[in-house]
Figure 1 (cartoon, rainbow, N blue to C red):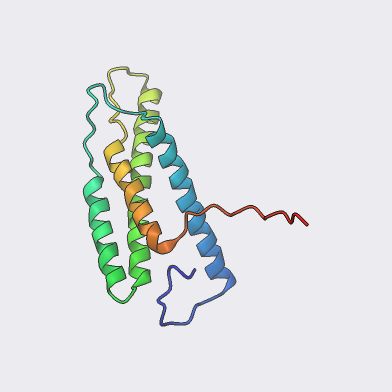
Figure 2 (spheres, rainbow, N blue to C red):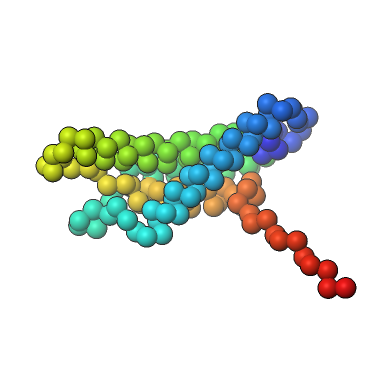
Amino acid sequence: LVVSSYYRNPLSFTDAAMGAARGALKRIDALRTKLDGVLEDGGFISEDGVVDGVIAPVVTEQLEKFDRAIADDLAMPRAAACLFAVLKAAEGEFKRFAKETKNAEKDGDSAVTVEPLDLAGLATVNHALLKMDEVFGLFYEVPSPMKDDS
């Protein structure tokens, strides 16, 4: 909620705003889980080991816009829009791959080739999310309560 608000304006602290913030955080967490899964095990690389970064230019552009928004008097709503544009690009890549895979399996045609996941682009997404998180502070581990030794 605070991340999407301009610091000079009052917060719109309502149940609807909190629900939207909760949904946005779940969306971010779900994407990070998917990214961790595909980037960690190095799956979905083409036979020749080369994957063109199709979504990388979009992500790079959004990261540049993010930097400009932060430099422009902490324009957090614009910065958050950049974050969600990066999320949308990554989600689109996962959806494209799932749809092509499903269609190839449904057709049962081994001649149908499924374009592999854009791992270079998804790695760029992961990098951009971590850079943006340096400002947003969304990706943190909740510390366990300390035990009192007395």
